[in-house]
Image (tube, rainbow, N blue to C red; front, side, top):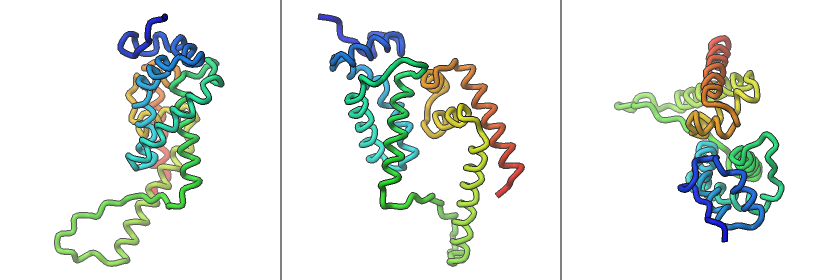
Length: 197
């Protein structure tokens, strides 16, 4: 009987190919080790996109259910296992958005209005319009990025990943991720300053 692979008995990523191979062969303990190693990253990727803790938890579970059903399709061709999981997560989230009958809304906090003198419908509409314009400006700025820069920012700031986690997911060094992040943020800043909302 082969020893059980766990996240505690190996450095992160050190024996992942062996772990994936064993999971593909039907070893439940190997898949459980992969789950333990990656579920937080998948959840952190989905939470800011769904803005709903329960939905993010449900989608995270569905990511791993699909991964288990399709693990025989995973190949090591320039894509890490974590990146494969995040691709499944992205596709599930897009499916959820397409099928959802609720409209995604941008929450705008109410300003501190002590005396209640500025609660007119007009001022509320103006605040919402400003928030929408700001979101449009950020979306336009993100569209100026290369796919690698955009992916890096998504993982770092929307997915809540550390530079090391982002580097592992993207198959790059931590230094490369920091440089990519810096250049992407500079490009976004330049774009938003050139085209104010």
